[in-house]
Length: 254
Ligand code: SAM
Image: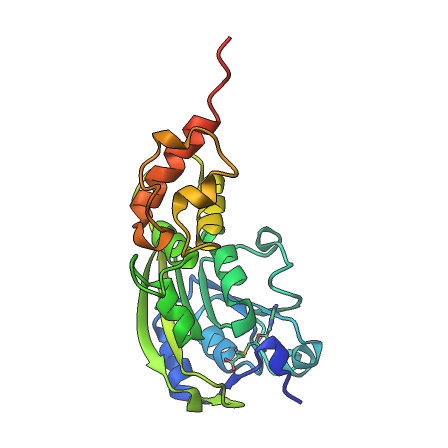
């Protein structure tokens, strides 16, 4: 029985699976992380081309079926990928997954906090559009800002929903993430920046002044107060974050 609640829409087209794997340029030095191997369509292709695959699957029934069919260079772990500490896994350098759509956002932010050289991921098409959206568009979100700050992100292709079973409601996209060597702008405190971005996008139609005035002092020194967050480019959000952080974290004068 398929468990829709945990995003079990299995890829059934071998050619799509091959393209998904090949976009990651696998070689015999690579150690891959895969979230949700399912029935193993991607896992088996990866295992042929890579040194090792670490596959994390939450559904113990699928894990039991997979165990006997996977080659020795696959480490299969029965766990929730959101809960497992990536640092506790053997080191990996690339990520390939057809992600369960329910965890797209938290698992993507989790990837962004861990080192890797390339990720090739299947997401629902609308989610992928939000990942690459620019300021001023309806798809622009805190996800777009986080992805832009940490990575170079490209949509490689759109995949028809008919290549999955059960057929989901919407089409999907294959997305490539390559972490940036250096951030595109300087952030004084990343945690503060990401918390601020989350707070502002939580009220995207409000003016920035109205969102911040309950929480912070000395707003009069800040730019963009009469704008809405969706109007600000990531660089401008960075500027706002740095100024707000400095103003509110200055040591008290003696
Ligand atoms: N890779 C397979 C494929 O392409 O056919 C399956 C992809 S399916 C979209 C998502 C898979 O992720 C399912 O096997 C599901 O059981 C698993 N899954 C869902 N939530 C998970 C989680 N939190 N941690 C690990 N695996 C999860």
